[in-house]
Every structure is written in C-alpha cells, then in structure tokens.
Length: 206
Image (tube, rainbow, N blue to C red; front, top):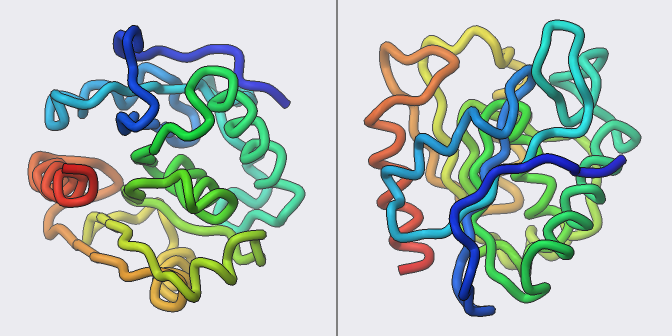
C-alpha cells in the first residue's frame, strides 16, 4: 500500500523545525476535500494526501468499509505505515507535524500519534473515532498524555455512539483531550470548529 497522489502548499525553503499540517480526509473523499480549512491557519505549510484505496461510490478510503467504525490492526497498520513512508520521503524526518483528520481521517490522525508521538506537534480529530487496538506507542501516550483536540457535531449521526464512546475512553486514558461538541452541527465542520482548531494549533505550535 502506497500514497501516490497529494496536494500541498509551497514546501520550498522549509526549515526542519517548521511545523507542517497534514490534512487527512474522510471515507469517500480525496486530497482536495480539506485544504480549504487552511484559510484558518494561513501561516502554516500543509500537505494533503489521497487515501490509497478507491471506493465503489467514488473517492478514496484509508481502509475498507467492512469494519469502517471498528477496524482491526490488519485494517489500520498498512495505511499508517504508508503514510509514514510517504511523509518520510516528502519531509525532513524530524519535521514536526500538525495532524488534522476528518471522520476516517480522524482515526488516521490518531494512528500517526499512536505510532510516532515524538513527531506530532498537535493532533486534531474532527468527527472521528479510534481503533480499539493496542498500538506501539500507546504505553508512551498513557504516560505522557499529550494534548489533543476532539471536535464533533451534536447531531452527527454518521459516527455511531459506540464509536464516539470508544474514542472518548481512549482519549481519557492516553491524552489530555479538549473535547468540543457543537449544537446544530452534523457530520461536518463549520466556523465554530475551525476557530477552535486555529486556537488549539496556535497554542500548540505558536
């Protein structure tokens, strides 16, 4: 499994210590889905990869639909490794990353945090969930408890309550999560969400 398509801001002249935003789209979308939110983070360079698996409805996915809200290790490890391989080729191996993922991409944001937490300067989960598996860095996260922002719409009917509860349990035991719920919002992102994301990222990376 490999990442072959992406879009990005101008990455010329990047310094190794400069944070880069990694935008991780949801199931059935592609690399063009999230870059519009970068208007809220205008001073940060960004990359937006296309997930590796085409879906029958169009768009792309990080893993198959069979266990979309309850993936196992065999589902999540290949795309996690593919993302790291792609990032290692594209960026300095010490580049700090701000990972922002929506829905299935939110799960992939947690996967990057759960595999190489030392690379993650900030983790933002938008209407996402987490894999109920033990990942290599989970013990480190339980000890260090990094800050994470989790945003979801109060009227989100796409991510099931069990998946929301599972993510909340994982966040409580492994992170210092800021959890935000937005009345009137479904499985989506709005100005309220992005203003909170901008504040969180600014506090995390300056």
